[in-house]
Length: 463
Image (cartoon, rainbow, N blue to C red):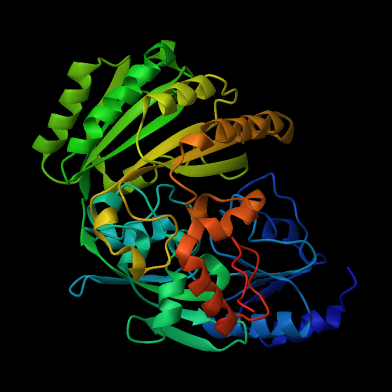
């Protein structure tokens, strides 16, 4: 490294947080991110303790001409949260969550994880709609939109964002809300990390749990096409309090899976009930009676358990690569492609997930946020290749790309979910936002004209 150590000593002295450089113990842990495919060596990692620390780190980065990356949960599939020879502004220690149950509001630090937010809110039987892996960072998933089990009932995470504290590229600190800096508030709800570093989020809360009804029905590949057709039949008539997903995966070696089906490749139809048991049971019975599964798991469980159900499968240290798109529905043509390509999955760690979006997701005004891709009912498809080492991952990466190319003709227009985009999707960013892109460019030019925050699905400032 060519950076002067004393310069970093000056930074240390100006912070209440911690500074880690390549010469310091703990450097390798400090630069580590969720996706083991990413192996980068920043010049310095700054563990911020306060919003003021973040502002100081931003000023230091600009004065030192260091490329900035921002890390919350370190879950960026493309590793945007760490760069070579730059500065990592790490928010992981700013992870407090405070709940006002009476007002149904929660505030979460920019470094909070989804499991932190769920744990604090579920004490009161409340929740924020968010993602489905507990060790995901609240900040990253929120700024891109935020979808998961509660999206049909209560919308995206950004639909429930009330206000935020943002550190800008010039190190100013702003509060944003519908009535305060509304243009920036609009932009951060779907525009990703393009406009600043969010150090605190305020969310609206909803009554959820603490118990929910869970059902997973599993089908072998010989039944795969029929399973997708069953999903197509069920989805239009889902009760408002039931969420539904289709997942292609290898059956895990869990107690509820008969031993002879451990690691068997197949299709899981998953229904989660957030209201009365009766409506959930009706959906499960319809699926089971119409297409008996190889095995099933139907039981009540804590909402927090649902939210962490995929934590181990998507655990730290996996080598991962992803592509995503929207499908309008499971057409016969799409089903043929999906079944053919799923059969080529090699790694038992890989998966293909289809989120069923509608209800509150579609009821929201599409123009009220910067969310990409539109709000009509749809399926969000995520093709996720994962393997335990880099050698095996090369096979999965090729599989993901081939699958994406084969199914792309069935996709809805050009819209994409920015949280599912990687570094090789940069050219798709303008089309992902469609008519919103020009407005986002103007806001980017107003708040970050030099594109300081560019390690993301980048929105270029308007000239």
